[in-house]
Amino acid sequence: MKETKIILSEKEIPRQWYNISADMPNLPKPPLHPGTKQPVGPDDLSAIFPMALIEQEVSQERWIDIPEEVLEIYSLWRPSPLYRAHRLEKALGTPAKIYYKYEGVSPAGSHKPNTSIPQAYYNKQAGIKRIATETGAGQWGSSMALAGNLFGMDVTVYMVRVSYDQKPYRRITMETWGAEVHASPSRVTQTGIKALEADPDNPGSLGLAISEAVEDAATHEDTNYSLGSVLSHVCHHQTVIGLEAKKQFEIAGDYPDIVIGCCGGGSNLAGISFPFLQDKINGKDLRVIAVEPASCPTLTKGEFRYDFGDVAGLTPFLMMYTLGHDFIPPGIHAGGLRYHADAPLVCQLYNDGLIEAKAYHQMSVFEAAMQFARTEAIIPAPETAHAIRGAIDEALICKEEGREKTILFNLSGHGYLDLQAYSDYMEGKLSDYEYPEEKIREALAKLPVL
Image 1 (tube, rainbow, N blue to C red):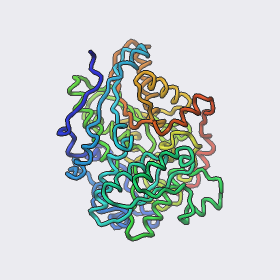
Image 2: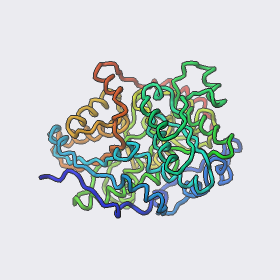
Image 3: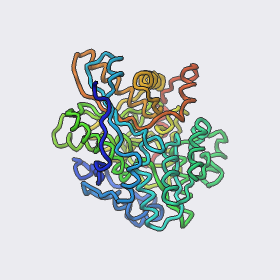
Image 4: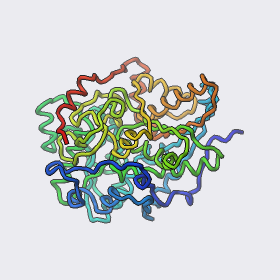
C-alpha cells in the first residue's frame, strides 16, 4: 500500500516556536502610534496585551520556548497528520506529488487554537479575567472560546454580521464553550452604534469587529484584547504547523518545491510556510504562494503603506499591503479572508519577493473544494479551499509541462459547519465578485500620508 498519512508522536510536538524575524533580510517598519505617529512602545500596548505577548511581538530571537501548560493542551490534537493526496493526484492525472497538512483535527476544527491557547495562557498568567476578540467566519472566535473555557476565563466575541447570519452553528459552538457572542456591528460599543447609525444594514467586516473588541478591552480594566491573525506573535505560534511538516517530510524522504496557504490576515500561511522560508532565505530553491479571494485582493491589488488595523482607527499604524481600513468587502462565504490588510511579516516578505500571491473567484474555489471532497473525502472550509485551488492549478501546470514537483498546502480547517456555503454553490446561488479598482482607490485616498 502507498503511504497516505505521516503521523508523529506526541513527543515530537515542537517545543519552540520559530520567529522568522531573526532571518528576514528586511524587517517590517515599526508600528506607529495613531496619535503621535511615533513608534509604539510596550507601554502603548500594555493596556490591551500582556507583557509576555508584547515581548514576543517585538522579539528578534529565532526561537521562543513553548510553555509546558500550552504543550499539554497542544497534545489534545498535535501533532497533526501530513497526508499524501494520492486520490486527488490520480483524478488530476498529474505527475506532481501533493501533500496537505490537516489542521482540522483540532477541537475547534481549524489551525486557530495554535495561538488561542498560548494567548489565553499568557493573559491568565497576567491576571486577566476576560478576553474581548473578533471573528470573521467563526473559526477564531470558536478557538478563543475553547481556550477561555480551558483556562477559566470569560470571552466576548464580536462576530462579523454577515457570518453571524450565515454560520449560526459557529455561534452555537462559541456559546457551548461559554463565550458571549455579538453580531458586529453591535449596539454594545460606541463604534458599533456609529456604524449602524450610518448604515443599519451594515454587513460588518473584520476591521469593524476589531474596532469593537479593542474598544471593549480598552474600557474594561479586567479585559484584554486578543487577535487571531496579523500580529507577529500570532504568526510565531502558528509555526508549529510548518515545523511538524518539516519533520514529516524527512520521514517521507521528500521536500516541497511549492508551499501554499490561503491568506486573509496571514497566520495560517505563516504557520505552514515560515519554517520552510527559513530554508529559502538560506538558499533553498522554493516557492511560497499566498492565495486570496478576488473580492478582497489585499496582496494582489493593495498598496504597501501604513494603515490602521481596524475601521475606527484605534490600533497603531501598521506597514501592510492594504485596501484601506474602511474597506467593506462583499459577503463571500470565506468570511475568514475578508480583511483589508495582511500581517506585516507576510507583507514584508511579499514586498521582498520571497513569497508570491494569487487571487481567485469563489466559484473556482468551490469547484476545487468539491473536487477535493470527492477525492480526499474531507469537506474543506471555504477559506482553506483557496489553497486547494492554488495547489490544483500548480499540479495541472506540472501535468502540462510533464514535470514532477512536490506541492504542500495547509488544509487549515474543515467545512462541516460551512455546509450552507456548499448548498448555495450546488444550488447555483453563488456568484463571482471582483472588487472594483475605483473603490479600492477611493478607500486608499482617505489614508493619511506617513
